[in-house]
Image (cartoon, rainbow, N blue to C red; front, side, top):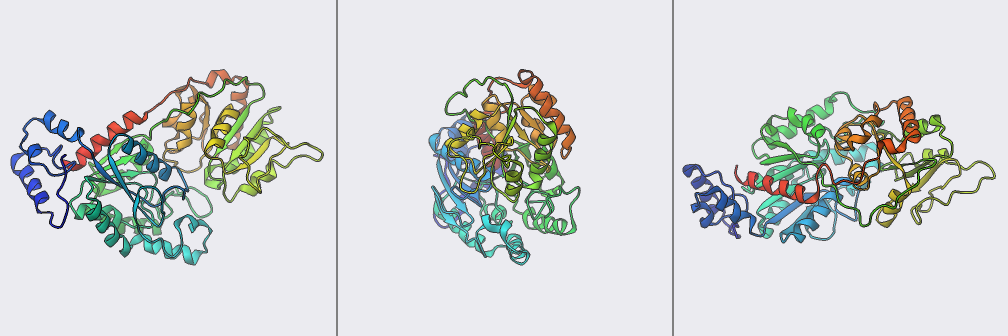
Length: 462
């Protein structure tokens, strides 16, 4: 196996790097997965490539959160990636920000409270987290020890909120190949979303975020990740403003995974629309509720899955009229205590996951993704496409890139409640016009892993 020698000194690694520069070799193989003179001696690009691809790769993943602690799709993707890499015969370790879980080998303490509790904290405590996110001294020692102990061939970072820019520079300082995936806007915005506290999307960087971006750029510049992957064209384009990222950025879409079972064929009468995600203003939940009410489609229903600050608004929109029987059509077991099924067309399901998520997808005819921020790549779009579920999506972030071309006519201007009402009625009038067969597009897991291996090779070539 092409692997760096474990233990104290990194001198053999530096010698290989120096040899690469002297000989003009591009480093594919010997720098990507570690140190092996056989790889260095080979003048054939194909043979060096084969050497790297035939061997086990030790991948150290960095992710602030890790299941069961989940706030969004990034940590779910990272956990799924870990399983896919292991299934492919590779070795995986994980470093998190205070989140225990399978394959986690080290945790940077989450201070002064768990990251997943950030949104519920008062302003003073949120400020403490922001300060620690600029420079976290714990990250350096813990990550350095994890790298030394695990001896990875490559570090692959995902969301690192709370661990600070140290998480993005320590691998470079230790001369470890490093790939970073952009799931959000943490490098550009202290809230990671380019959304203001009141839920309004930012049209430009505020002074605070601009200052933090400048600080992070200075911190990262000398030891930046070798390759930076964006999960959509939209999020990649936003990061082109970072000087250190020049020449390192590329697009690698999140993989679309086949559902466990084919979705039952539905006879669409009165349509059932669905929303799945955080119940927050920047997700467009308020706009969706208004648009659904205004569309006034006879017999239609809106299933709303998720938790968040707008749960009470969703429940109010679905309050059953006096004397009406509660609906029994919500996915069985999906509505936790406090969620309110309704007879008024809108059903608040609460948290939906696991088996109840499949029940949710089986129940709806059309998914609505009304985001009012530059949503990089909602995982739910991939899930819908793999099941042949048409999507009404906002023209925001990576959403237009990820929906089926057949549903492109259902795109609407973000925040435009009237336009969304129109798209709801369009679908209700002719569902078949916007429904495509299930497809693993734009990328399946095999294609995603191939792209990752290319990124890992290229990281080692620098």
